[in-house]
Image (cartoon, rainbow, N blue to C red):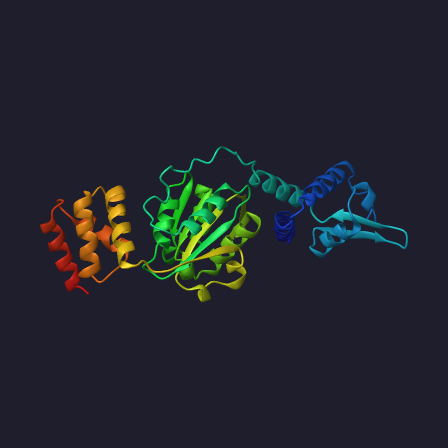
Length: 326
């Protein structure tokens, strides 16, 4: 029973500290723990008053409601408080402090050719660049049909240092926690966010975007982490994203490429990212558009990667086989 009570105090204390937007609660905890260590209990009514730990009575009462403190004496003139379990409070404070590590603010190394393969969408590029230059994270959601530039835009962002590209449809039940705890990315690039259906992952993402603090409880144990992470995501359908999560994003809408835009973009991507000679890149893009009936740049990349050699005959062979499968 004592161990269960200690774990409850620890969990409640860590949650209070993590959700404290002002940061003042950390100091209150430090002063309470210091007072408790210096004043062992003398009797059942012994305890500290608000002025001894320099804390607002309303804050102390909130700690009582959360079963972190208890009232030992209440009169018309004063109220005495004591920690329910000072060891649990101290452990939670240490874990919180160790999770909130100072940010190493270096100069952002943006690739000089970022977005160079993307034709048009200059206004959207500007918003994303402004987000990258912001002192605090501004999260951006790219919304539009499958054959638009949004995934290509995310792939470009995944070239940023300390970024992590994640496919939403392939996230395991609580896989986002592992990505964040293990890799601590500065930029989380999340494709197909509308296909994330795990409540654990959605809750983790919401906490990251709202407070920059995540807590995971697994097998009775907790771990916590403070991150300064920008989230860039894409979605085909906004109605599949919870409203509270959607409200954390700046949303940018992408339309389909025109035929001419697709030919230009696909040719650039094949040349700059896949190493295909320009003449053959144009040939592949035209084949994808005319015979494969697609304006998805990824289809052009798939064809390029299936080639054994860079010849038109190879392109024709691969395209013919793929068309038969449709």
